[in-house]
Image (spheres, rainbow, N blue to C red):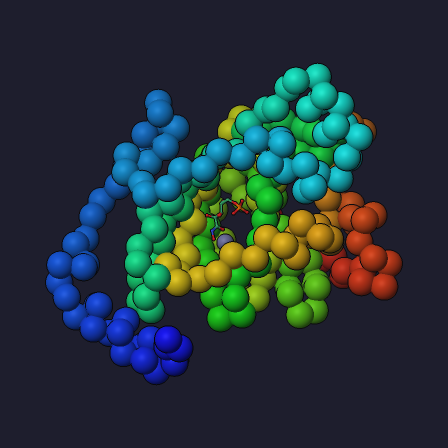
Length: 224
Ligand code: PAN
Ligand code: ZN
């Protein structure tokens, strides 16, 4: 059965009219368990899940061949019904570490063209990579405790932990939004965030050498 947009909207409105579907709630971040006190889904991403996402494939291979498979990050989500008007709440912890010269990071993804998101950084230090899907312009943002980032619709996003401690952030996004990982898996983002041993600042941003030369992105200066 084909459900048209207007029928879907109508069904969503019916759903939202039922009070029983909309019980408000409060959730707490449990520091000891490193998760939310309540969630509907928890995911752990190890190096083997991110094989194609790190630049240095040889180092990835060597680590896995030795029988090591470090946890890169974990995240819990409170997923609400996929109707217009509902929001999901996500919590992510990225561990500190490096694969070759590249810092631990999330896979990163693109949402649909009309789907914005907000990130709130609770603790740690990181770079939020934002890439405009249309223009491919990269907007790197420095985030740390209390930073709140508005991710406009159409911007792919990845978080890189450049600190020595875990980086923790909250995400608020549309419950009916879509997550596209394939594009990132295929070509990565336009920049890599790598260790910088010759400077006071322990990281630097470099263009992603794997990106097709014709598709090289313009990289804006890091926003503090
Ligand atoms: C976040 C991310 C979370 C994990 O909740 O899903 O940080 O990152 P990846 O999804 O890229 O593996 C979010 O942006 N949700 O839309
Ligand atoms: Zn997202």
